[in-house]
Amino acid sequence: MKRFIVALVALPAIWACGPQPPAGTGGTGGSGTGGSGGGSTQSTGLPCDVQRVLETNCQTCHGKTLAAGAPMSLTSWDDTQRNLGQPVYQMMKDRINSTVPSYRMPQTGPMADADKAILNAWLDAGTPRSSDVCPAGISPDCIGPQCLPCDVTHTMRVYGSGTAEGSGVKFTVPAGPGYQNYFTFTFKNPFAPGETATANAPIIDNPTVIHHFILYGIDSSGQTHVAGWAPGGTNGVLPDDVSMILGFPSFQMQVHYFNNTSQTQQDASGVAFCTTTTPRAHLAGVFTLGNLLFSIPPNSITPVTATCSVTREMTIIGTSPHMHQIGYGFTTTHTRGGQDMGILSNIPDGDWSFDLQKHYPVIPRRVAKVGDILTTTCKYHNTTSAPVTFGLRTQDEMCFDFMTAYTDTTPMRSCSGASTP
Image (cartoon, rainbow, N blue to C red; front, side, top):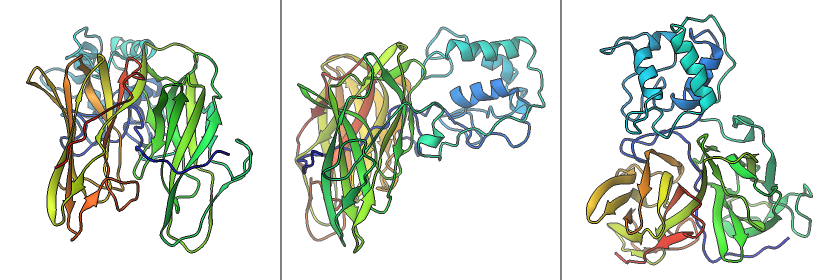
């Protein structure tokens, strides 16, 4: 096993799909699978295939709890029969088949052809009510490989010192209290040529000591963020037309352990993947916006900014803000030639939580053109009598936004601007 302390760490972007952000966060809403959470224990009046399509494509916004300005739920047959100026089922028909991106649903992109065919067949048949009792859906609060809506094809897990990758021997975390360190575990590429990732899930073996991890793809030009987990993180499921690049010679998992117990601990945490060898329309990557050089004065509320000039046109589908314990508020804005193109990340002042570091989908997807400016602002509330600087420890601070975008953004691995407050 190759093991060393790293000089810089960045937290994970968990791709494209996750829980809804607080008001104003993560663009204009969410998308993905498992929207309603929990599935049916009694009939909703919807045929099971229709219910699955709505769960997969619609219910993150049109769930029992509405989000992103959605005007109605779509969790039952009764919901589809309401009249909001016109019948909801007619609105569904119009929106899913529209060719106008700003009007079409879902706003993340065209619905998969198979799903659209199921929904159109039901709508064309007059939306017949069903007595089906459907299998339980996947709750968005369910985290781990067992909660993925696909079959796991590969896993990478940390392993014991002096043992081989895949040996099944757990890693020993030195005793605390207060012990923390970074370790790196190296993996051969287990993926076939052309194989790409469609979803991932964290495997959290010992939550007592694992602080976070990041999985990087390694090649001759450096490291590329692929997957990871931080407190509050969830599974990641990419939209049906997007998959994640995996064609690296090797991978490295950087793990931050924090053992606050008086005993050594064992851990075998890692990441599970669902993959495909069938090409999808878009190949995504992750790039990092952030600031590495800053100091937060004592007893202050202080913003730290980083400005990125886009060097390659891309479509941004999700963001993952990251700060530590004195984080207070967070934004990433997008401008073009001085024109405000809208907010990409927005966690209002006072709403940041170190224990709820989520990935937020950007809806509609945002095209960033060459020369556009992305500006990340991390705001901190330092209530101590000492300055807090950038660093690897939990009591230090970081300022990053990890963005998932396509086409493959590997050439733009990071875009950092070091500006002090």
